[in-house]
Image (cartoon, rainbow, N blue to C red; front, top):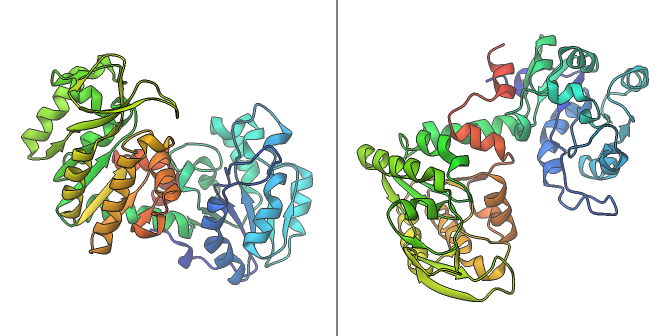
Length: 395
């Protein structure tokens, strides 16, 4: 792996692709700084090595140059977290950027404007990548959250550098995925939640060759329960994926993987905070009710399986955890993963909603690793080579 430790930054400018796609409130104040904090070790390593850092990132999904998506809004927060001067230039290509880069002292940071203000970023435009590449002597990719995109700044740009490497965050992400998927200690338990089977097909098929237990929760479980002939009321399911669910269950049995489905559910008469709440058997939900969380029997059964594990991979919540009445299942699973980790198991949590859940419930520091990437984590769990990784590893 081409890591930061193998690069000499003394007197050099490091062009670092970071993931500063952070949430802003209506006052344009950053409400979650975790992605900026995650980039700090890499930036500090460059500066301590005698270099300067030119940071580039996207923010949101702007249509053209929209001021509300300007990275100028986060400059102050970046400076506070990095603890060194952070200069900002209101563009990412052109003469103004050239002047700012040429005058950037060693030990300081230059933050470029939102890359997605130019369509060439998402299009993976080679000319745009070449123009960005002028701003550094060494290219560092530390943006795992965008590593699954073949964009100009995450993949194409690597062609224009002889010296390139992964940042410390990317290195950590890749090593943890490697540990969970390819160096796993059995028993291996995968926990998959979320809304749709269709979004997790590749993940399930890849994991079936690597796990001993596959725990299914969230709305996606109802496609499996329906496939088994269960009555699921108004619960969300994918009618066109019934055959796929049956095929997955057959594959699991053939491969000796124990597939666990909910036995009971917490149901609501609507998807809202003021819904009426009842408990039903998972395969006997009446019309007018929808399963919105795993029930107490399922929580106990799933927790027992998790506590036997030596390796745990978790992607997706067990229910609509944003609503307190339907957060219990996800909370119990988070507690079980934390308990198993404390007893010596290795646990990897990835995917936007499950990460949000463990953070909201205070378990982020009680598991082995929480991934910063949503889509990138999913594609890595599918066994895919991520473009942002391939651009450096296979160069």
